[in-house]
Figure 1 (cartoon, one colour):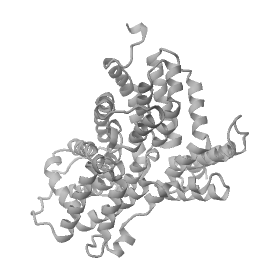
Figure 2 (cartoon, rainbow, N blue to C red; figure 1 turned 90 degrees about the vertical axis):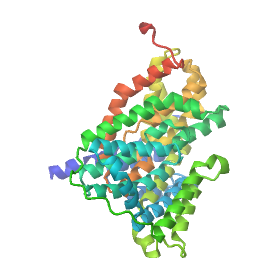
Figure 3 (spheres, rainbow, N blue to C red; figure 1 turned 120 degrees about the vertical axis):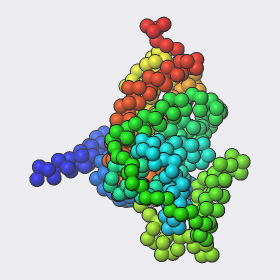
Figure 4 (cartoon, one colour; figure 1 turned 45 degrees about the vertical axis):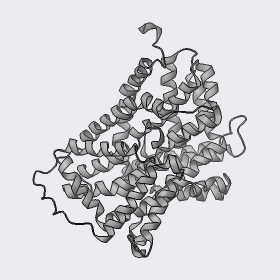
Length: 467
């Protein structure tokens, strides 16, 4: 009885918090429906965080409650279904099924074995480096994880890592987290990065350039954070590569399905890399590749395979998290929280060090409610007020948001990360075993180093007592 109650305690606390917010008086000046929107936000985020229900079921429950109680218009609640990100996932899930069915993933895994099989740390390092390198070429986190997860699952099979083993879990967590964390320092590689760039131009007329963004963020938030990620995964999910690896399978020519899928993937990657030239969204490139796999004359994924191999759960999760982000942005919850946090930290004019850490913390906390793309969407419009309060330039205030949306506390904050875990068969709590200590290391090591890097670049000044 006690054990059951203890297990359900997080769920009960989430429900109690949601009900408390629902029935408490709304803050003065809050728009109509604020309390209901805040309560539903707590419910959805809380259930995703504690894993009380499968992620897709929490998303469907969010849709149901929002519509029954008229928390927001249908156009807001179901906005995720019209977002490109959802169709990017849909195309990617079809491609992932094709990679598994044709055996192309196993073939690519065979090519990687000789290069990565020396040791377990070398294997995890290779997974992280491949994910990071692909971010320079493919400007879509969701597309990258849906391309890489089946390949690395095939590699895990080839290395003898059974489902549930530390080695397999470590590889899936590595590709899931490294596909988002390091690329947060590469301008077009993640959705929050692009939201920031768009918001900076739309609200303030500021164009963030690729090189300046990379120089400011990649050395610490990209390279050093990726190195810390490798170290943590090797410590938390220790394993070893077997010495009795089976010999490589004899090299054979690609069969028809493999060749067709390789051509589709090659064309898709070419369009991803050249998106600035043709202007086609990665979502429609992914969807086109998925449709090509379904075509009867190609039939890489058959009708039966579409019913059994293409997982639909991630689609509802993505639609739910995007709908929640829209709800937070339009209901006033996001504005209320951002101003509440700003009032709480008491920004000081000219105190660069304090303001740097305070704004980083605000972004991190806001990301736990509005998810990562919500950080620049909510903070960018008030960046001018923050710049006036701190004495920082508008460009510096905008760039500081990167520290917030690159600090991942729990996997639910980034839909591609959770989708990667679902496709890889790894529970969210396993990834949280890495993200939580990584947050601690980020605050103890990386954010201070990043501050010093900004000082070295002449962006900020040292506190007076250090001069």
